[in-house]
Length: 269
Ligand code: NAP
Image (cartoon, rainbow, N blue to C red; front, side, top):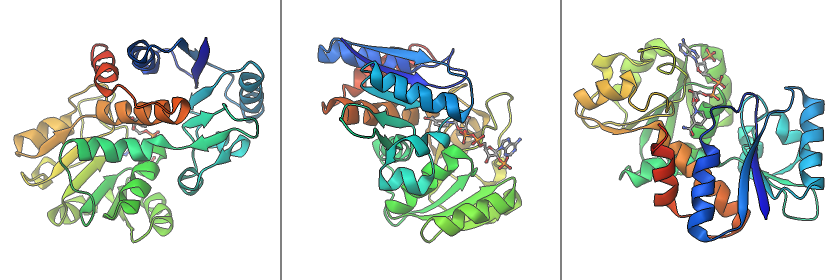
């Protein structure tokens, strides 16, 4: 029996166990996906990763609040190193575990899956926290010109300094930025707790593709207003799905059964 898992705090409402276990069943793998909730400090995180390795756990996802700190305890790939965060650890080798960031590729796959062309596109990422960083690097690496708008403008500017060809802005610049954009991604938590959007509805247009990283609720105010404007909308469960798909493929080397994972995820949202 192979064991995979999620390190986070809290992890109680995670959708990863049913999503990954649906894949194991579909692939005929004898495996389990378990959630672990260590105390939220670096020392405990290091012991948790070492302990998982000692116990033969083959792979870990990492979520809040450990994504940045986990970088210190793995051999990160180039993208995870540049993003500054790890959400997937491969423990199957004999040396130091390797660290990856599948949020970036997950966001790209979600967009491409909906027919969005990224190479040569002009993209606006709202938010410059963990999700915003991953999405901004992912889009820029795939050939988009990226503008990052954030409530705390200095954070957007700092991120833009690290992302190729990117620029950083305050939220008040969103209408001007969106007038030129092809793609908009919300990577803030706005819309999760309350019926609010970080983007003024008047700035949305029918020829935009709009993705929200928020997946609870699935239909955020931003996506509702984007649909009203005639835009293509992509909910946050697609990014969640594809970050899991990428993690599973890193761990098992098998092609992930995307439909089974998607069904398991959406049945719980
Ligand atoms: P984070 O690191 O805490 O960053 C939060 C971001 O939201 C920051 O840019 C912050 O701006 C902004 N923000 C928070 N409250 C705001 C408000 N009232 N008005 C404007 N901006 C506000 O969080 P994260 O890990 O990036 O997660 C962000 C969202 O993405 C969450 O909803 C999370 O569930 C979702 N997410 C989804 C996936 C997926 O697979 N679908 C993956 C990762 C994350 P400041 O810098 O000004 O504080």
